Length: 218
Ligand code: SF4
Image (cartoon, rainbow, N blue to C red; front, side, top):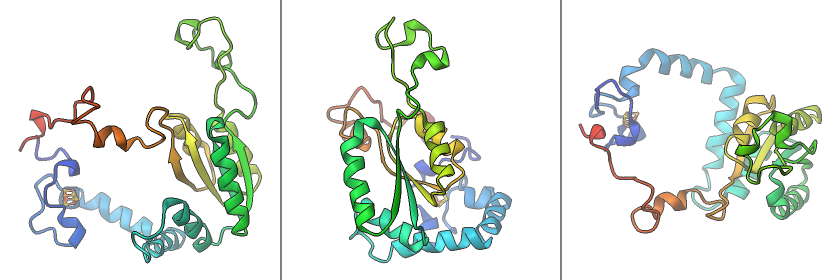
């Protein structure tokens, strides 16, 4: 691997965690990208970013005790949010209802928008027939830009994603003017636990080649 190729994934020491870079590898971005890291730190010191980062740190106080659902609620409270946006996948409608109940019971206002808002189909983006699941049929299509627009227009202070498809989340995050956090991501096969594929890649999901490639060896 090229010394300058930044690959924290292959750093055995993770010295940044203890704030001592003396034994960090040559490819460590903390050492090779000093200017960028300094610029990022300056940005982090901007008042709003600083407060946001402090609130993240505050969610760590009960380290390891709170579920992500609870951490999301805590973060929203720390941020002082009154009105939350929930952008959910129609396939997780039950979860969206449960989570909305929870947020309302915690005292938030909630605006929830399904991915199917606008009733779009893949014909709206001129998807070729051969790329549809069933050629010649109406294929429903998510509307993440619409979800973001609706939630922004409603004055939501934090948008929470629940189960959006890969790429739809990208479009949502790209277009949301409101800060975004992710409660859960979509994995139709693994009960929305995509890491299960990695955890079992050496036993069951062997079609995923997670062996360390030669080029990664130093
Ligand atoms: S930032 Fe440096 S020390 Fe931290 S994981 Fe990356 S390479 Fe390792």
